[in-house]
Length: 151
Image 1: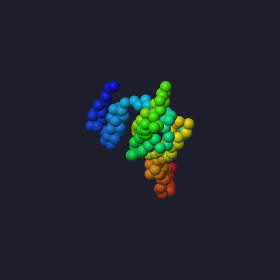
Image 2: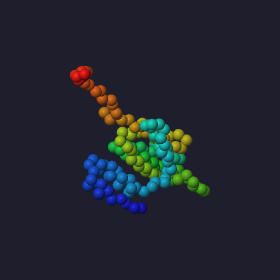
Image 3: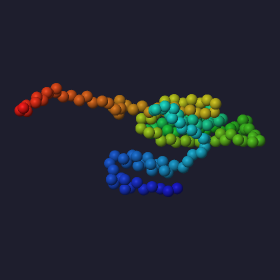
Image 4: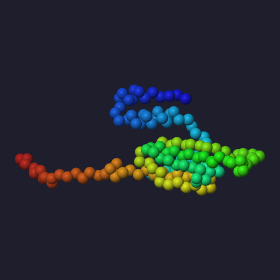
């Protein structure tokens, strides 16, 4: 995989260092293939991440958000000798996983549900009032300019 050097941009831009840092970290991550997941847009400012977690229950999955990072971890408890199962074919992996997602500014997880082997994470972008566009009223006098030209 190629790496991109953002050093020239650091020299000619102001305030974009966070963007370039994000691009650096995203480029360094390897593509995760387990468990499979979907990311979909469900509305103008709403998103859903659906993760296939067959064999996992609510207690086996941990969801954590910190700053602009979302981390989803799953791990099954170790089997004891009395609960050990003998598989003739093992097609459901049930192995531990950790998925990391970088969230945009003002995107927060609004809820999570586990149904039919899919973990659905609902995300919503909520801009604070100070960041929303607003109309500025133009105030001024109603001065009338009289025509003083000579006819």
